[in-house]
Image (cartoon, rainbow, N blue to C red; front, side, top):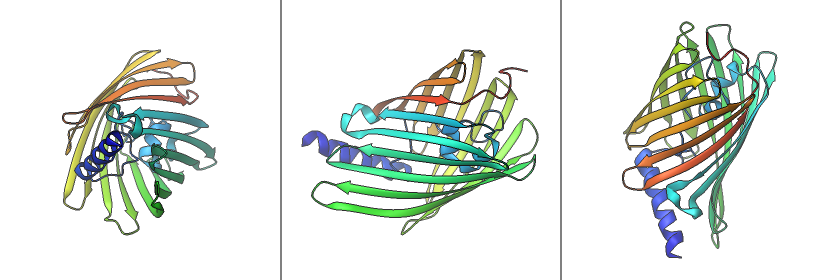
Length: 264
């Protein structure tokens, strides 16, 4: 019981600090790649639905994290994207918690290209919270986003999220593709009077290996990842760090056929 209460207090506290859903990953910066064209993958689409406009092939992924090394606060997610003539359809299922208490979110999304310079996306979410002995509550929310490709190197975008009975949250960001092997990105997220900033870098050392690093404020979520490529399979071994709550290790597997060479 003591362990379970620690889990609830920790997850509740960190949610207040970040003013974001508990169901967003913190063991990895899923936003790296969101503001780009050549670095889009199923994890970045999970973060920003307009990224579906730049996924030309079927993609699927699974994600898991052991939040703050608490077994009762493990988060799991599955994601997929199916291309259509003008964009792609996407879906995800995310669950946090254990048999005594858990949150779950089922999402469906569609992204569409508006030509070479822009893409839009819309995502609907059904979120439920179940507590043993107290029943289940549920709510709906919607995410809408747009990406603007200023040129082949500079990309920007905006996103808004509105849930029933909740304040509207917004985010905006930009990415700079220094090359097909290097991406620099930054984003700002706000809900009410709370604002957080994230920045990250992705660098592919060789065809089979890449590194990611990120920093954040409000609260301080820092992260790092080592990424391995085996043909169409991408394996991310990552960890997030919070100065008070500690380490959150994570693993993700992404299947996405390569559509361009790793380097120019």
